[in-house]
Length: 299
Image (tube, rainbow, N blue to C red; front, side):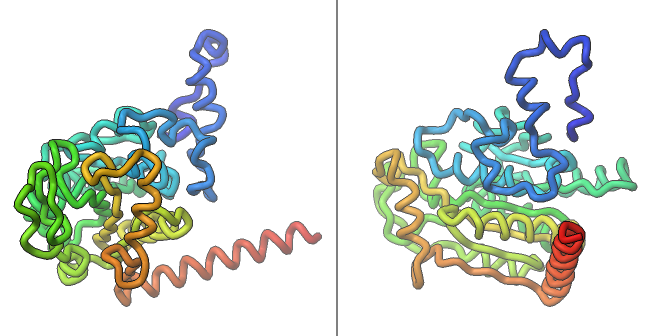
């Protein structure tokens, strides 16, 4: 969905809503350097949303959208949950799957897009919560990794079922007592990042979304590696402030408190040997372009 697809005919321009005019004029489609700093300026990066006030998922969603390398050639696959309330507000192609089968949908979609558009790379990105990813949809998540499907899976880890009242999920921290889990979690978080690594993912990252530069780099790395090599996985802590008893302005601090050394969301990154060679080549190419640009400006 590049700018050429949303361009307004000259004869209709003055009667189009000003919001649409602004989208066409300021969208980041085609901008090679697009990133998290475009949040707040680009209309397609969730100008409004229907999540709770202060919800960390809204921050994460904005960063993910801002860091897609080519949003005009990206299709996102979502699942039932809080994230499904946001997709109708974004200007990126997306599919709403049934609860848990998002990776199966993405597998077929990626293969179909490769046949339909053989001359162009179409990125597929799955975005779902911990219930859809590690509980109900775990089988289809793992099978897509086993088959080496070339797309990125992003899990918004709320550490519970945030959309349906606070039930226990496999990613809930041990001992946590939820509104719908009064007995408290009896076992540790399912180590999905380690499982992803052992299941064939070529790039795996775990973090909160309190550091936008880190999120931007991880999202771009994951999508570019998936495009060329194989499956990738990112796990982002997006706490449900409503279910953990926090005020709407406390979500960011909750994430910061959970990402320090030894904490459950301490930043971790795994890159396969093949992916490391690829990313090093990409980085070297970026440096060559910057050097050439500086040289051209100096003339």
